[in-house]
Amino acid sequence: NGYIDDAEWFGDEITPEPLHELLYPPGGRVDDLRIILHSYGGRCNAALRTSDDLRACPCNVDLVVSGTAASPASV
Image (spheres, rainbow, N blue to C red):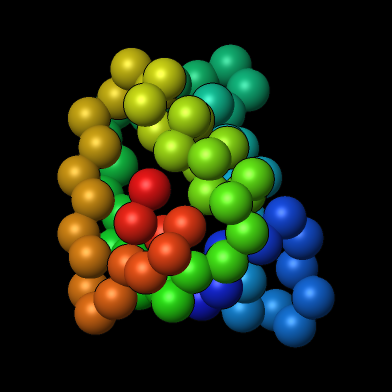
């Protein structure tokens, strides 16, 4: 839940770095991932980096939109 941004400013932003760390842990591999998304949008660059990481991940990704996926969140 939150605004997609490159960095945290107020503590409720969705940033690409934590997802990247989850998808590509050091010395490990993620088998399955379920994302529940609710966002009114944000910055395009952050959304594209997140999208690229999800598409490149060899794991099974299940994405559920809970509420809204607007603007860059729709990527």
